[in-house]
Image 1 (cartoon, rainbow, N blue to C red):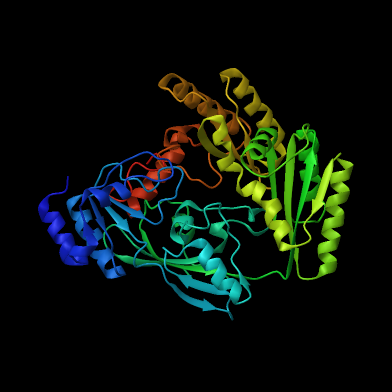
Image 2 (image 1 turned 60 degrees about the vertical axis):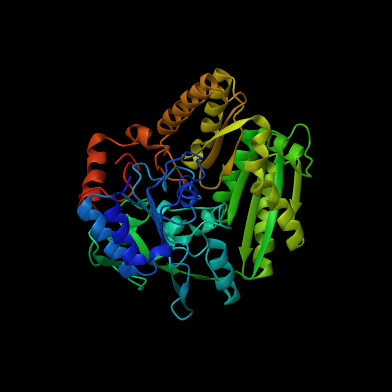
Length: 459
């Protein structure tokens, strides 16, 4: 519990109405999408960068933990106040698009701008911001940077870090730095902006982001194919990726996911459908779009695709794409979901999926999978039908076996959800002690008193 003197100091900085200790406020900021609960001692709504600097300087001196927070939509516990302390709630005053520079194809934004809102604004200018996490309707750009969020368009356009050109950030000691430049080329000094991306709020509080933009492609189309064999579908993926066609998105849904979709949504697939591939393509000329479509159809037919559809309107595209966007929530019919996102080299996807099936048989769990076939990022959902203590324990044992399998296949623990507290115990599976010591040394260089988002990423 914070001493009253600390609370009174914070009130002087941000004002009484923006410094909250009431139970209702503390409960709102006590959880994220993991649904674990860690209640802070105080919620502050800073109105400007100088206030953040004063708060951090004070907290650093008094060793008070601070957790910066955007929408709280993370799936690994990255915004949870493990030690209580202060939550810096950024959504109220740091939600402005500061500049859209069409000449240099960049934008300056504050960290609490919602991803989808930003996309809509830049698209009105004929521009394009590709990173599209599934949480795009409510997740913030600052949170996207902190977790290095991906999305379905990552196959062609990359992930958040590929668009972060510069950041303003307040360090735990209250000093304000600018990492990166608005120039396309910059090889002066260490890549601090790169280190800060995916740091999960452990190194500083982001107050401004400079993002790279693209020109919005004129045409796009969505394609769908259903296969009776996973191996055939994966072979089609490899052939597409080496054909010269670069799809915007290349997603897959396995048979358990398809069956769940049929029960929850107006969808119907053939009874022997084992996997669905969804592909989005784009381009500046219709002829190039047609070329891509023909090439993909040729590869699908070669690999025994039994159902091939091409969207003829935006409404049809949205309907086809709704299968993927509704995949996660459809799985509730199977029980409690232990949701992990893991990534392996694309060539090892079949081995990963075979291994996941074997884990499901061993523990008696259904494990539906879907995700980004184009970049090897799979959302693995271990479904615990009876979520009592005994079955949940088995579920977490299955999670550990999954991570061991992923590491054996030269993969990583997370492709886009981050580590937070959920995957922190498994960092030693992926990183040596020497590597972890380097991470700790970086953390200590930024935050020697370990006040900023402690206990995240195993640090």
